[in-house]
Image 1: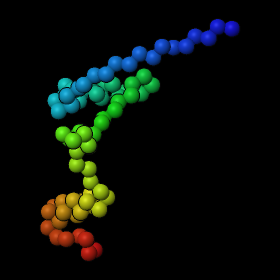
Image 2 (image 1 turned 135 degrees about the vertical axis):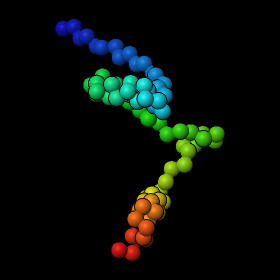
Image 3 (image 1 turned 60 degrees about the horizontal axis):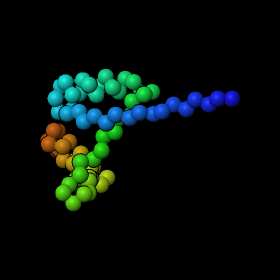
Length: 78
C-alpha cells in the first residue's frame, strides 16, 4: 500500500488593502476558502505588543458616544 502525502506549499503575500485594487485581490482570494487562509494580524507597536486594543467597556462607551453624536441625546439612560 502506497501512501501519497501532499506537500503543502505556502505563499506569504503582503497586500495593501488601503487601495481598491488591494481590496479586490483580497476579495478574490476569500472566494477560495478551501485553499486560501487569510490572516489579519494586529499591528505591532515599537515594544512588540499589539497596538491599542479596546476593552468591552471602552467599546460600548465609544458606541454610546457615537449614538449621542448622531441622535443628539444621551441614550445610556434609556
